[in-house]
Amino acid sequence: MEFFTKTMVVKLHSHLDKFLVADDDAGKVRQSRKGSGRRAKWTVETVEGANKVRLKSCHGKYLTAAETPFLLGMTGKTVVQTEYEAASYWRYEWEVIRDGFQVKLRSWSGKYLRGNGGTPPWRNSVTHDDPHSSATQNWVLWDVEAVEDEDDHEFSGISVVSSFASDDLSNGSDPASPMSVFSLRSPPGRLNSKLQIQTISSNKFRTGMDFFYRAKAVRLRSHHEKYLLAEEDEESVTQDRHGSSKSARWYVEYVPEYDNIIRLKSCYGKYLTASNHLFLLGMTGHKVLQTQPPRLDSSVEWEPIKDGGRVKLKTRYGNFLRANGGLPPWRNSVTHDIPHRTVTQDWILWDVDVVEIHVNSPVQRPSAPPLPLPDSVHDHTNAPSPLTVSASFSSQQSNDRNGWSPKVEGRTIYYHIAEDNGEVLDADMQGYSLNFKGNGVEELTRKFEEETGLEGVIVCNRSPLNGMLYPLRLQLPPNNVTMQVVLVLPMSKVARDFEAQGLL
Image (cartoon, rainbow, N blue to C red; front, side, top):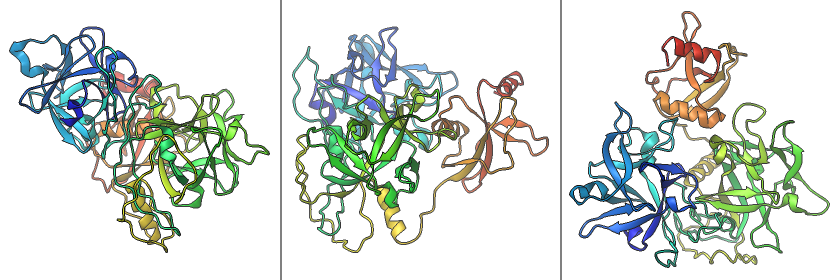
């Protein structure tokens, strides 16, 4: 309840990096990435004698757990905004359940307020339901952001909401947002003079520069769980899943004239540079390179902009450092661009793993207070690699030092993308691959959409009898079974054939 008792107005931010908003028409409630408007603000009314709240929209209506199914035959029930009726008071009350530094809001029916993902009509919808698979466990978690409502009250102070489970919060770069957010997921560790070990694990900083506070070297991890790498040709920049090499380390330089600009230098002594060379003719993205210009100009300067628990790195010309997915030549490439599609919005977000810091840093970062250093971290003078921000990366580093890699959970799925008529080029080759932990076809489809950047793909297998493609419809085999699948595009001829045959 402490998330709601210290403020009168809040914004609710889902695990999918979207805000709960109240539409103007017909009492609808949905999710949106735009959280700066009044529709994302909810006035808090506490329920006396209970650990519950009522949330009133900007239209004066209450967030209501209705009894109407969202889709016939499905478990989720609709969530709407309605006028308050005393006889049905329980429909407007939401029990606040803390989960780490996030909350779950439980309705009168025992279901949870849930921000749905996936394909339409689920995408951006809000229901009250239970998470039925591991992939949707975080869909019932919400970050609570206290905001200032100029019409109602004055708010001052710092919201201490953050999350062990999620790196999502409001876009701190929004100039209209009066909210500052700062917290630590775990206490910072003590550093020794020979090896700088940082266990700072903040996912809710006040500004983008705070991610680089006192940082001497960092690793940047993309939305695709790949690290920004300086290639050995000392010119190219790519992504790779193996972040333990020296090529994944970028040294931070602060620009003296500015308090919000940095430069990043590779292990080869060259700067991360936003060039003006097109990555592909006819496309908008421009190449990102390693260069050593004769004089340092704006092409090597990046502005960190906070976006939840991650940062966007903005060029002086308004583009963002972008880690591309999809098929070659896009796969593993890095450009600077502006995302134009919803599915690629997260491609410009980066996790920052600080791997080395200035112990006695002469650099002053006005936006961040000095961080206390407890005595809990021991001297690891002989360790070959420093500890990073994230627990998963720390584990990877530890395993790399011992000369073995941890067993990867899930299965490897190899895939090809079919032509319009269903033909698969290079079918005799292994194809692309991804690691997948689940067993559901719908969950796998979402994973492929994230991996390839293609919306509405149909996951198929090939019949061993006649070689024909058929959409996957049942549960997948156990996790230890390697699979070969084919992705069919939704507007292709073979997809239309599936529809005509009633297979979709």
